[in-house]
Length: 392
Image (cartoon, rainbow, N blue to C red; front, side):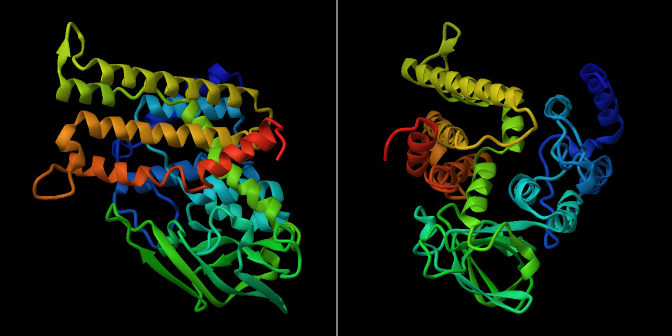
């Protein structure tokens, strides 16, 4: 089918199948069995997208995907954006562990785990960072020892996003204590719903608790859920981080993003205009520079998507996207709070509107963006060594 024919068919299908309640802001499923979907239109939209294979549009149909090419995937997102359709499913399963299993999983692992992700029957969390192993992730000490058909896991992880709602975890564990730290690590999958796993939320400055401490006391991971080779999990773990930082899902989404006009409107409201321009010249220049940087990022994303031969996530270059996108996210929130003046720094629910409070929560949360998924300092080292080829 030619691309324009696909666009016409997609537009017609979306018009007939995307309910009004699935357009605009609202709940998006992450597949967790512990989070109920209360809105009937959101549930209907998810069911229809699952049937179509478009919860994971570019995955093979064998595993519940839509089998779309990268170009078709871009068209789908463009047509969804045109009618304000929300994603039906967005999760660590679709963006991180799913693509990793497509590359490194056995056929049995793919058939067992990927269709469940595509059908929104499971949510995953990431077991990487530990209290003493953050940026130096390879120094992790959580260990796993083989006992019959299972690995017995003991230790702890920290900053485990969404662990309190997750059904499964992908985890890096030490399986050889005597090997060099990068060589004695394995990548495994384990169920969160077992007696050996304890999750404790971490309350943040923003007032929310997306992060957790996770403790393992003789937790079990099946022998068949070792991904890749024993003691060679560092390779798998690094590749998953590339999917997390700028996988094809995020690149395609970014490549279809339009300009953010909300910042300009907000600045006009709070700073006023003179001769059709923002009254404050310095802020006007900063917003213009921000918009130009965002457009450069989007153009680069589009180029990378267009150059992709098989929809695969780029390699070390994902570190560039991670650095640029997180710093632009922080810059956006810096500008947003500043143009609002005293209204941009509200924490008292009795003195500020819900919108103002939400801006402050976003501002607080954005401070972590340049730290999680590997700090931007680490990403610059990767860029220097792996992208530019500079000496250590």
